[in-house]
Picture (cartoon, rainbow, N blue to C red):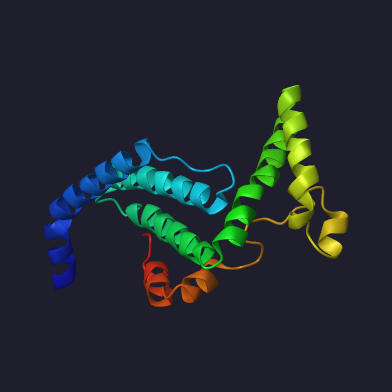
Length: 182
């Protein structure tokens, strides 16, 4: 109970530091240039921008209990990025290439909803799938019966807990997921 009171007491300072971190990240990303073939650089910049959005959400949610959900999402993103950094060229490309599967799924949802898909978008998505789709095909019986032939995540079946362990964050991962949300 004493630790909780100390944490609440420290909230204003922590929120101030979070605002400063967001401002620093914004200044760093404004002029950031990524080379077309730098998949890991592209991934890193996108993850940073997403962390900035999440940090803004934390500021809005504090001190509500749902804050932990955003904090977990941020931690998960950090683990994925650190895990990808172990093999930056390979995993960065895998993350970036998976966007074709994501785009295909969005296109399928639009079609199922009876909405029109822009022809240029359809061609772009189909071309990307021709180039990268095979990397993300499900294996075995699941693929044969599924209307969606692609794996669920860019990281395939690698679990977030496995990523956390691989980057030295297993204890923090366990702590984050031991916390309740109610």
